[in-house]
Image 1 (cartoon, rainbow, N blue to C red):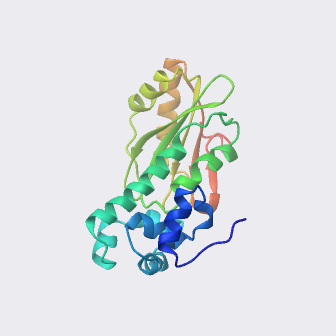
Image 2: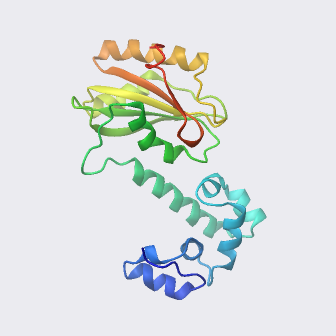
Image 3: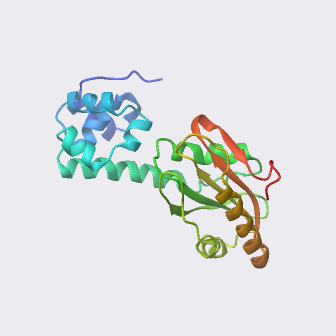
Length: 220
């Protein structure tokens, strides 16, 4: 593993340009995004918003009012975080297989980490249970998400999905499915039956990879 370098703003930029971003400290990478000349401001920000969860939770108001970061720099940072999130949603060249709840957690839990809102996704799969596309169906509130079956299945039909696995996070950290989760799952199963797209499972993810499978619980 390459050594981590600290306090080397200009050199950090050169290392990134030379294809060696792994040799740059977290603070210096953050300083590059923010446009700082050195990493002290970035280190202070990381102290208040430790990676990885802290940065995901940082808002524009936090960055500007509490840390004195300008709107342009805050926008660059939030935009970079969003680009990283979107990149991870794209299916890789070798399509992962989703056959167990653990597969769902491996794919989705890192992206839910640090979120204070419920995110409801659908994993569109082919006949071999290979991932075709991750569909972001909705982003809700602290304890609920509004999901319309038509939005989920519209996107699944576009990629000719044979089946879907639905997944959402509980920001509270407790993956126990709510009554609303169970009712929604049954609605989705019925809608999928009509369209010929089977809903294989509904996985609820809490803290630290803790999760619940509604199929394993016999609730589908």
